[in-house]
Image (cartoon, rainbow, N blue to C red):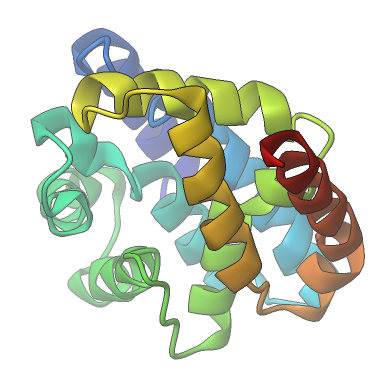
Length: 192
């Protein structure tokens, strides 16, 4: 598996071809999820082969946005099946990568450890200090793509989302849960 070449290829493609309305779901997000997945996998003791599959899935997990939001996880798997054989990935590797990608579909329902890790990596920002910066980017994207109207409407959606969200891995719970709760409290305060 030539993960560095597969990484360069998809990031170049996202940077060049992704519609500009995707202020959040873009190459920067792919790298962010890759970085979080690497951190969590290392802390969770995941082996090298599985980590390579996980990191590839992180890079490709939202590449389906190249074709729009609808069913983007399925489209991301189509991209993986189309492009990853060029980088030495076997059909079995690619199916495992697609299984990991599909775990990110909302509502998240991972059925194995790698699925849990990518779910936590995908929403790692919920418990980080850059939460409000990234939340603003997601809001500006949803204004264009989903017709979201006001920040008050966005705050209400975020409250429901944060109240219902839970991290799966011990690492994410330890590193991100308490800060996520602080963010939730801050949003609730400004809505009353």
